[in-house]
Image (cartoon, rainbow, N blue to C red):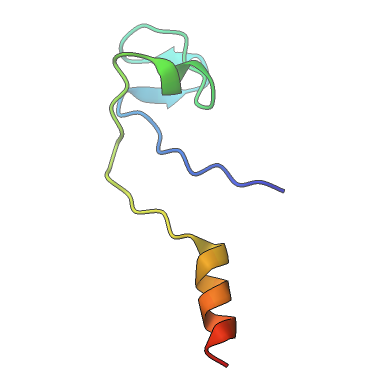
Length: 58
């Protein structure tokens, strides 16, 4: 099962609610909106790479 790594928009409140008055869909329209601004700069860890490096070290 896949896991989404997108960071929610600063203006996203909940499904269908956006502070900018747009139709808010977290995984759809918000990611393509020109007013999109991420809430925080988050570094996403590549867990597969981390696991492979751990197994090579053994």
